[in-house]
Length: 290
Image 1 (cartoon, rainbow, N blue to C red):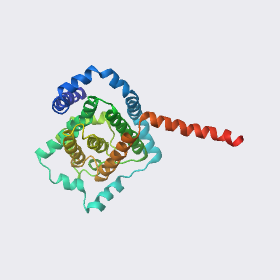
Image 2: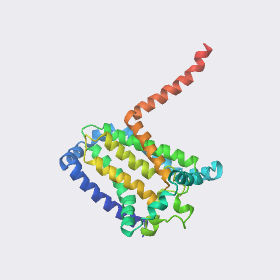
Image 3: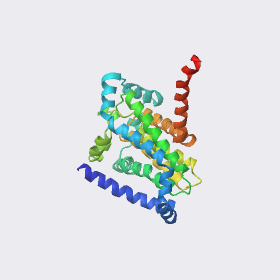
Image 4: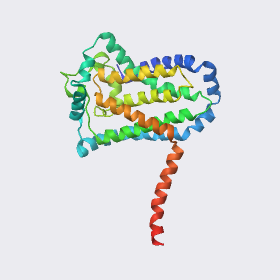
């Protein structure tokens, strides 16, 4: 199946999920009101969205550079440590344990969650928070996602890590490509097989869940739904042989850090702090001379 066909199928399924969730959770009246007032809402969040766009562009445009840097210069391959961490914690490998429960139904469920459920989980909060009367929650979401990608890019540059399916195909099964081979055309376009530690699938999914907890008074129904999906996404990454348990733990910690940044800081505040920091550094030599 060609990439365009995979993207079309993904778009149709996720849009259907988004429309349904918007009607049930947000409500048609709130959605229509938000569309009528879209201009000031976008203007309010313009800076956070610009920061996210810059980080995403940087991540996309530097994939080849990052790969050469991590493999030819830094060469910090931590795959063996991740494998040993999992065995030290559980006495066995949790990926093997999860895959021992393998059935066609369970595999289909986790494939759906990993691809379609994950995309829906990341996109729906943008719709839901955009429909609120204030844009504080949307700004928190965007900044949290920005922190996720920025910190994730740093780790992907510093460390080489291969997932279970790329380490020992006899011990770990690559169930994603076996059950849904057309997904390879999509994942090859947006990811590398060394982008494992931490699991961004886990970190972004758990970020949505943690923010759903923070904003639970706005959308109480969304909290259990996002929790179920986020945990399912995290489990799917291991069941499908893509990530180690250590990657999931690191992804959850990254989510906590990112949400803390999103809740307690703003882009304006961060920019002002950076300016003050460099302003102080530049002024200090002149002060000493006087």
